[in-house]
Amino acid sequence: MTDDDLRLDVAAELSWDPKLDSKAIAVSADDSAVTPRGTVGSFREKREAGKAAARVYGSLEVADRIVVEYP
Image (cartoon, rainbow, N blue to C red):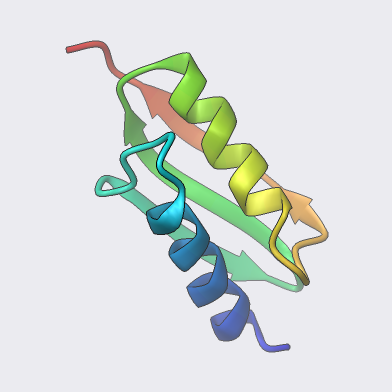
C-alpha cells in the first residue's frame, strides 16, 4: 500500500464516521505514519478522529495534530 492509498483510505474513514465532522480535517501519510490535521468542535471528535485513523489497515502510527476549537 502506498502512502497516497493510505491517506485516501484514512480520509474516507474520517468522512464515513458519523461521530465526527471531518470537513476541516486533512490527512497526510509518510511510511505508514498517518497525521490528521485540522480543527474539530469537541474533545470527543478529536478522540474519534484518532481512533478512526488508527483502525485503517496499513496505519501503523497516528500523530494526531487536531485542535479543538469551541464554537
